[in-house]
Length: 122
Image (tube, rainbow, N blue to C red; front, side):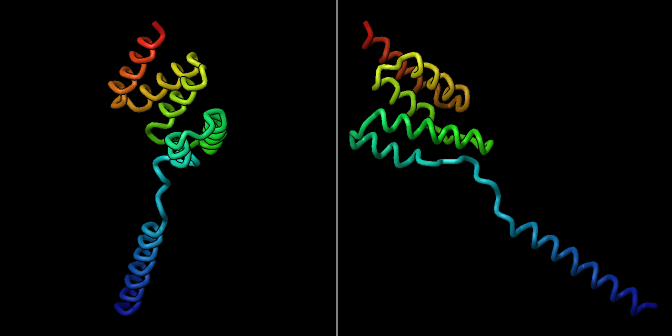
């Protein structure tokens, strides 16, 4: 009986070890879904078409939402800057507000952008 018990313990240990290793092998879900955000930032600094960038980021935002993923930090702020550059101030404020809600650490920067926009409007 001792030999059967030892075999059972060895089989159980092997099964538990295999399950543990399988659990470690799965890759975690990324924290953010970037889509084309990083290339769009580059295009922004190159001075490419703001309208084309807005369309691209809006499309990416829909994809991210459809996949039930999270946007990266700065996504809404960048989209807000693009809206400001295209004269869509109401949409800019909406995106800046969303950025502040999702990433409270950005509040000082977003407030700075909003105060500069108000100064420019006067």
